[in-house]
Image (cartoon, rainbow, N blue to C red; front, side):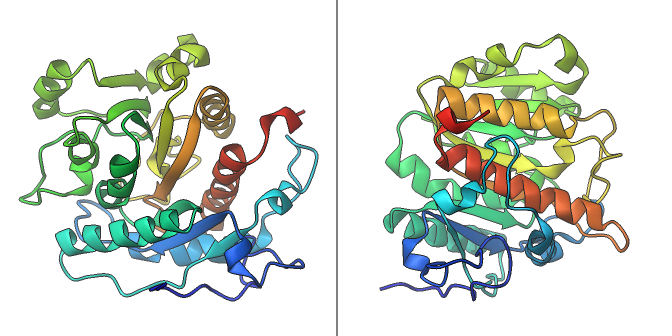
Length: 302
């Protein structure tokens, strides 16, 4: 029996106002708001991220110039009612894993909007159980390969280390420009499973080379918004200069969907700031683009 409830259909593009949109069982995608904030290490605010994204999504134009159509009608989206988050980080990760699993059991595409990056270690668990060739495509400023941080094993700074605890999972990271000395030995010992692309080398890196490890694989996209340059995305807990721009990120996402199958994902680390509503809007439109690349026939692209 379903354990969660859907939001009313008139809240956002995530439940577009059109015939049938009040019937969430017809949706192919489900957005899961999960405002986790339990291990932030610099600036806080991720607990408010999902609410800000949902509010901004009301203003996102549904017509997509890449497809030259209002393609959301191809798949429709339902949004879960936000739930109280469990008290401990370990319990919260079990909670989001159960929520994602239930969405997958209904045959729908899950997209988590957070919330701090630590949630990925929970959200990915049902995918690991289903896919034995899962590749995580990580958009991020930070490698997140620490084996815990500030005494927290599941810290946001250890998000990808915890994902790689699953031996069947491999990782392709893009937009990186920050790694600590303590992460290097793990990186070097796992070069067969980890490929990192540094933002400083983006101009000289072919997108075809970035997505080569994703070819014919099932892909989980985890998009930490600090992947974007801090001038574009200052509303995040640990911004770094020198990141990707909007079209660089979209080009990589589109190429990934061309060569593999995006089966789920998350958008994390929005920490809304007063007066910076452009950041909320960016996160909402990014969610729309991820869903579209994952769920719409690419032969319709212009």
